[in-house]
Image 1 (cartoon, helix red, strand yellow):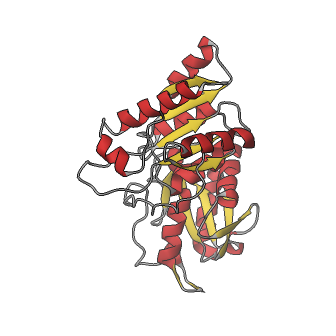
Image 2: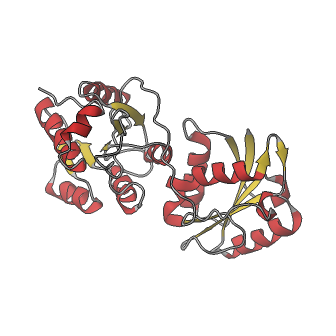
Length: 299
């Protein structure tokens, strides 16, 4: 289904990042068109920065003059009226999931109702919405960027293939890393920017992340900080793979929270050793589970 989304009262950075997530996310359940500077009655969904004066006015207008679903954005994630709220720090990682849940609750088939005021709508603040692990993606051509989440207990039968997320603006590098990770049994998703990577992280479960530093928009350091500061993704081992090799750049990587820092060009031996080290640490030396999920240490 297609929906129009009005953005109100946001900073230029938040506005741009939300637009990228809504319009460029791969495998999104719905299609979104972003609107600005139009009445709330023209939109299906209104995302309001409730911490801004313009947002407060827009919220009042949306409640009074339209049946649009309203999502309140704030620093705390608790401000505003209605069941759909999100905190600023979780915006990029959780926005699509929140909208999917809100649309599912508010729409019956193709008939649109008034979701923001529906008394049967469940609370949907991020703190209240349980995290449901995404279904394992279909096994396909491996990629170079791997992301990892909390370790699955040894007794759990989670035998999906190991998932990797590779983020690099070079298609050549993405292909090289994807092929390398395939050699050790990893399935890979790839992204060419931080925004695209965040959209994938919101929808998937990953076991490792490989990040380039220099990319359009947010750089690898900022992406790493975002991953490590979010409670849903901070357990993912992050390997920075970049041509920047100065002590200052390594320090920036460490401060951003990366787990390994490799400089290009990297030898196959050093690359696979770093990946093996992070996977073993992440799975707490549980070789049985690693092997059950298809991992093959590089010879």
